Structures are given as C-alpha cells and as structure tokens.
Image 1 (cartoon, one colour):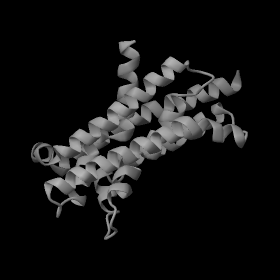
Image 2 (image 1 turned 180 degrees about the vertical axis):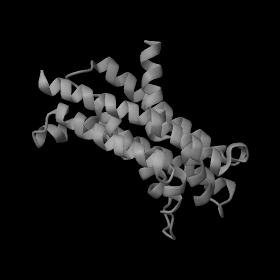
Image 3 (image 1 turned 90 degrees about the horizontal axis):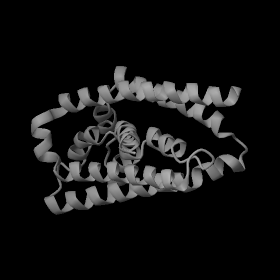
Amino acid sequence: MLHLIFTKFIMFFTVIDPIGTIPVFIAITAKSNNAKKLIIAKKATLTAAGVLLFFTIAGEIILNVINIPMSDFQVAGGIVLFLFALTMIFGESKPEEEISHIDNQEDKAIFPLAIPSLASPGAILAVMLLTEKNKYSFQEQFLTVLVMLSVVATAGLLMVFSTKIFKYIGNSGAAIISRVMGLILSAVAVHNILEGLSEYLT
C-alpha cells in the first residue's frame, strides 16, 4: 500500500511540478502584498483542485459518450505526456515557459497559475488514467484523489513560502528540477503507451 501511494505521489508530483510553480507564482505576485499573495495562492490551489476533480468524475464519462476506449486514450495520453516531457527536458523549462505567458490580465491566479501550471495537461491525463473505473476499485480511485489533492496542497504551501524557498533554489534550481521531472515523466509516458498497446492487442 505504501509503495502504491508513493508511486502515485511521484507521478502527480512530476506532472504538477509544485517546485516549478514557485518562480511563476513569484513573477505573478511581484507587486502584491502578503495578504494578496495568500489570496492568489488559495485561489490557484482551489481552482486547480476543482479542475482535476472535474476530470476525475467526468473524464471517463466524456470518453464513453464519444465512444473512445480507455486503451486508445491511454496510448494517446502517453504520447502527449511524452511530448510534454520532451519540452520540459529540451525546451523551455516550466518556469520559463509559463512566466512568458504572464500579461496584464487581472486574474493571474487562474491563468497561468492554476491552469496550466498546476492543472496541467499531464495532470489531467494522469488523474483520468489512474481513476479508470473498469480497472481500479473505488478505494483505489479514492486513494488516487487523495494523493492528487495532497500534491496540489503541497503546491499551495510552497507558493505561500515561495519567497524563502526561492532564495535557496533560484530560477536555475527550479529549471533543473523541472528537467529532472521531465525525465521521470517521459518514463511514465512510455509505460502508459506500452500498457495501452498491450491492452488493445489482447
């Protein structure tokens, strides 16, 4: 059980990348006071959790309505995850890419902080794959949701203490961690592709 929880936690920590969100949060809240920063962190965390919970509940239903088997989605999702991982490794790191999306819009807690920094395409795919109703029991799905929410909550806490943390890791540290996460994510993506193909061929 502990191994399963740890595996799920690592996967969600990789696709959500709470550490990579710290520079994004700092850039967004550069001119905000501490009270405003706390409000933005809470709003981003709750929004991301809501988006991921929505896809946990409705994602598989949507696939069934449009008649797409989960094995097909797993292969497609694995490919998307792999491409996403490659951009994390070889392209702009997560902080650099998402900071570049910051403009003068008012509600930056939603974009780019909640989406796509926390509720990233990788996180949405992961939560749908790990809560497949025909594959996992209700207890396993519930455990997955708890792990996912714990990672989102961790991201929220890191944002609250972002200034202190950033003093130690800086942009370079966050970029390095993001690339390491991309490497782990690429392995997870390949596993999903092979598992989906295996299910499709049997």
